[in-house]
Amino acid sequence: MIDSDLKYLEPEFREQIAFFPEPDGYNVRHRFTEKPDRLINTVTINGKTYAYGNLVGADGDGAERKRLIKRYAKLSLYKAMAQYTGVKLPWGALTGVRPTKLAYSELKRTGEFREFFTDVMKVSEKKTELVAQVIENQKGIYDESADNSDLFVFVPFCPSRCRYCSFITAESDNSPLVMDAYTDILVKEIRESARFIKKLRSIYVGGGTPVALDDRNLEKLLHAIDGINSGVEYTVEAGRPDRITADNLKRLKAHGVTRVCVNPQTLSDETLKRIGRNHTAADFFAAYGLAAKDFSVNVDLIAGLDGETAADFKNTLDKVAELSPDNVTVHSLCYKKGAKLAESEKKFNPYAAEMVEYSQDALARAGYGAYYLYRQKYAAGNLENAGFTLKGKACVYNVDAMEEISDCVACGANGISKRVNVKDNLITRYGSPKDVKTYMAKADEIIKGKGEIFGEKA
Image (cartoon, rainbow, N blue to C red):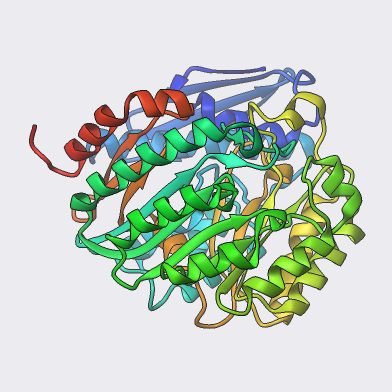
């Protein structure tokens, strides 16, 4: 249990559960006192008290002062827990989703970020170097411009539901009528949203499993995007190897798709069966061979899947690296609300950190560099998700989305459109309903709401 007198910190405090395997095995109380020139944070853990003082000047606006108060409170909580348990987390006191955004902010403010990460926020040297590598590999792509836009399209259908998945998706084989209706409304939203796009940087069709759509609906969707595509990077997260065929890849190519994701998550047939994926490692290799003929390919893997050993993950990673895809993404397993896995499992895979570290070292030896990363609450070992690229093959959409430096015009259920005000460092969001039927019922309202954030007058 965590008790704090800074109520807006409570969601951040939940991430510090990484210190304690059993959530009910500790009692943490935090108290904050503001002196004229100093902040005092007092943290008591199971009766043991730690106090920390931080100098903060009286100048600065309310938002900046609140930001510093929050930062020092999180840092004090982290330091107290590290002292109490003897555990040091790789990301230190950082709890944000996008560490590189903070690094870029420090670079603008002071010209460097490493000392702030390692000395102030207690981030490990290795994770700090990972952030530096991402920033280096984003050069030539990173572009903060008020003119840029990306298009994101969400297809909420899958052949089956994975145990770790928290997306609201429908099984494609059981939803033909819903699929027809959803595609028609999605096509309308795409066409109506074209006017919100300025200079198009990239297109990303995600899911779910977009190629779980039947041929007729997939063709309708791709045809709608034809009217927007200006020859930019165009990704389809084909996803499940068992739904990737020569025919649908041919269809994607005909509509200008340049990049596909073939995502096995693991190459252990035993694990695949356990997590609810209806394909084998052999299916992945067959799908990859088809896709690699005509597209830039990304492969998604998950570190920390339940029941996997470090050797299982290393085997998967090594076999994928031998294929030399343009991009490899390594996710740390998260126990998300709504996922079947979160309902049954109580402890993270103890080898998760070893898996993530191995992926970074092995991919570096194979010629890859990290080019984007993000973090999620309830991730195994408080770890990160990272995308790796061969030189010159980084995905523009992933850079724009993770760094939030471009407008995102999102279509479909669970799509979150963002208008990025680079000048004022302000992001305005509009989220569509996650539930498919609710999304379809509110399509006109959604288009109107998106128009308002992108400056369209009623």
